[in-house]
Length: 139
Image (cartoon, rainbow, N blue to C red):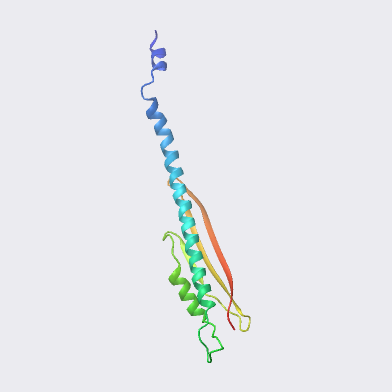
């Protein structure tokens, strides 16, 4: 038998080579799932902020009489949304100040989130999440 045929039939170290090929792919896949989970976490925080702003905007704030309600100010709704937002700190979550139109009877609430994906060995695309909600206020 020649040395070449002996080396060709030798199986020592084959598992180590397979492991070295598979581990970077597996780790990148698991890290990608974690990155996707962070996007879902940010989305939940955005929805929570919108819900808090909507709850406050639709509350009756007790006007001048018992039959009349005062609409909360846009600043109060904004502060409520900022206090209620949560999510990962490696992105940018922005609460947009609502601008109610006088006499329109509604406020448009908006929260945005921007994040560049990181997959350990390469940088992914920038993801932009944008959530809006139109809230009809009491009048």
